[in-house]
Amino acid sequence: MRSFVFGALGLATVATLSACGTNTPTGPSAAAQPTAAASPASAEGRTAGAKLGSATDKAVAKPAQPRQPAKPAQPAKSDLGELERLGIDLNEGVLIDVADDGVDRWMQVGRNGVDFTGTTRTDSTMMSLKAAPVREKNRVLIQPPFWNEEVGAGHCVADTAGAALRLEVCKRGKAAQVWTIVPAGDSGQFELHGKYGVIRVEDGKITTGGSGRTGLQTIRFAS
Image 1: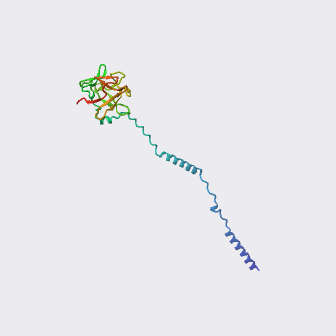
Image 2: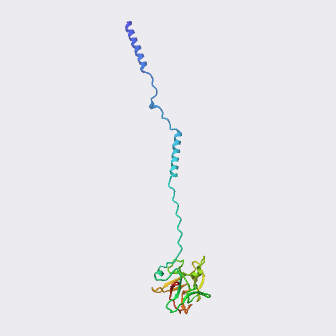
Image 3: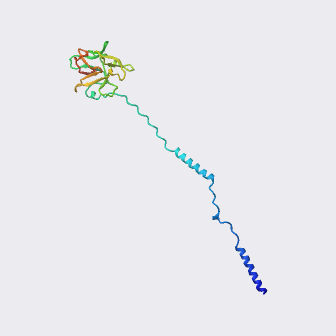
């Protein structure tokens, strides 16, 4: 009987020891560990980086092109191309002659104004036709070179309501100083129209009535 009891007791002891060896408690699983929350410092760093990137993008953006200044308007100047093609002498010293009257009657600056009493080539009979500062075509200023040698506005022949014309200081845009040359055919002859009408000449004098010649021509002063 002792042997059976001992054997059973020994088996019980062994079983107990085995159970103790296999029931060793284990720690919590790694998967069960709580996830660490994102660091506030890291979040702030990302936000600051995004803002910095945006500011950098703006800084390197292509600058706006500066506006080009407007070109200054060109001053008005009458087109005299037709007169040049017809052989009317421009921008040089000329005699303005009464055409087809058989005698020399040239425009002349005198004591009592400007008339067609000139018969010799002098400073007082040398004229020059220059483009007037207007948009309309075939408009000229009559400027005697002798009275336009000095720096300044110069002098222009101006129309008047009376018979004789007048020499006066040029004034831009003054209607009495702007003359319209109206071609009379293709021979180079023309009529001279001023503020008060067409110029008519009779015996060297400008008339205010309906009589007198209207056909004029230019003759080169140096010819």
